[in-house]
Amino acid sequence: MDLEVKGIAASLTNPTQPFSGRKKLLQQGQTPRSWAIQNPSLPVVPRLDLGSLIDSDEEDDFSHIPLSTAHIHFNPPNSSSALSWATPCQISHTQHHLNELEQDIIPENLPAPTSKYKLKYQQYETEMKEGYKQYSQRNAEKTKSKITQQSPRKKIDDKCVQGEESIVGGLTTLDRKALLQQGYADIPYNAQSCMKKSDAEMVAAERKKQTVAEQVMIDHLSRAVISDPEQNLPTERPESAPTFLDSKTAPLRFRKRTLHETKIRTHSTLTENMLSHKVQFDGRIISRNGHDACRELVGFFFAHDQSLTIYEYRQFGKNRTSVLPFIQKNIYSHQCGRRKGKQYQLGDFYIGANLTFLSSDHSSLPESIKENTLLILRITNIDQIALDSLKTDSVEPEDNLTSQEANDRLILKAVQDALKEQLHKRSVRILTGLAKYLQQLDKEGTGLLDKADFKQTLQVFHLEVSENDFESAWQILNGNDSGKVDYGEFKRAIIGEMNEYRKSFVRKAFMKLDFNKTGSVPIINIRKCYCAKKHPQVISGHSTEEEIKLSFLETLKDACSKSDEVTYGEFEDYYEGLSIGIVHDEDFVNIVRTPWRI
Image 1 (spheres, rainbow, N blue to C red):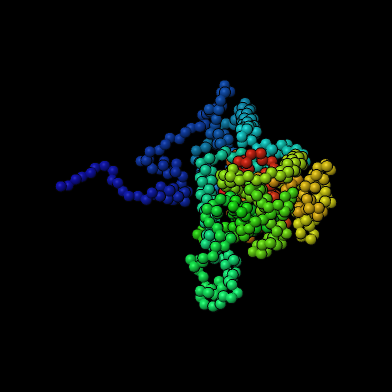
Image 2: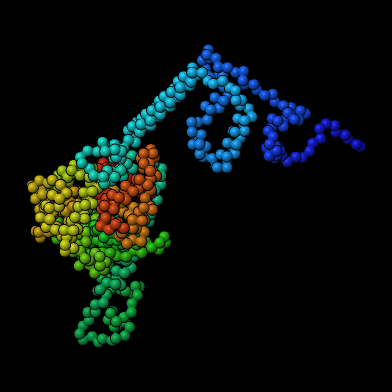
């Protein structure tokens, strides 16, 4: 069956053929218009006669502008700048087609524009410039209003410094940069995420305490009898009785014994019931040595004999742990203060209390701790339920030291309140500077300074304390009349310190940075770990993350004795200064937790 299709035959042609044909015409000296006239078979677009157009004086708009003039005003005043983004090849190609368009369709016998038309164009140009100027002014006013109009919660005010006008009192640049860190307190509280973190931390802490408690019971039950020195004493026998050195009649010190073969009941024999009446507490060493200050210590006070022991919990990696005695179980007494020489009692154990020991009495202590005469241990947490239960069962005699200690606390509190007003917004710089200055005064390296050194320090840092308050504080601190006081203790007494809840988060942040547990952290590690994404100024767009990070690093470096690393004492002094200006604990926790993501 034959099918015949009538019509125009379809042929595959090169899509680039029209352009190649135009190129050939141009090479032959012909234009598309002349070529179209010579080939009448193709439809020809009639030429637009623009010569008959005239400029009317009655026109009020620009609807009939001559094409040649319109073409002039279509291009910007500086056409080269308008085409500056194009490549040289594109510019030459475009200019070639513009020239060709002018030659083909723009006649040369157009009438010149009238004077009224020129005047209207000048008015139009003036109106356009004025409109653009007003538009720029409106945009600038909107941007300014966005900066000034902020919600009360997100407004930085005195915490996050936006300008020098919000700060009074002659603060330095470092003070202003340090105050930027207080902006994290304005971050909304995320209860869900914080609850998850706190739950995980509580589970880990309970697991750690359980491990230490089990080790204590094992040490004092399994080893008490067999390791008691009384087991090695010879038994009393009549002089006339013969002695045979066999396995049964030989003295105990010559016999090989196991636990089930021991039949001597010594005076130190303990039972699980006796050891269960105890108070468990967490502690930390008050030291500027970062490795010692971050030790995890767990202590126990036993009610049956008023003895105490302290164990150290150490973790190596994720799965390996070690629990070793730090202070052996014994009866101890206060080594300084108004209670010096008095035995520790149940009332001496509460959060914030200090336990003092003579480092020379404990040979197993690390060498870094033995360098100091006293070992001061601060109770950071305590089993309050067990403590209340033991207090109801035991009756301790009252003494007159309680009222004297309360009076001492009132005197020191008055001095701290007076200095807190002077340290309001420059506390970071003052506290970090105090630590460095006191270390420089300590030429012997003992950590002790006399009264004249402390008076000089207060004058250098412009801290005004009345003579009566200074003498009262000095008498409290110099209880042993030695004439010298530990400058760390002096600084904590007259300036105060953050509570243990706040300090626990500072220790967590430093321990996260100091993963090698060396006591110091390189600045490069701090730069890597510090995150400023959630800072209010970064969220609002007023500052970048890098600017907030650099402001923190600059103020922290000013507190350091070395430019490339930060010790725990310097890290703690920095946040001690920030803590003075923060009223609520949760705000301070936000300041520490947010940038370090703990």
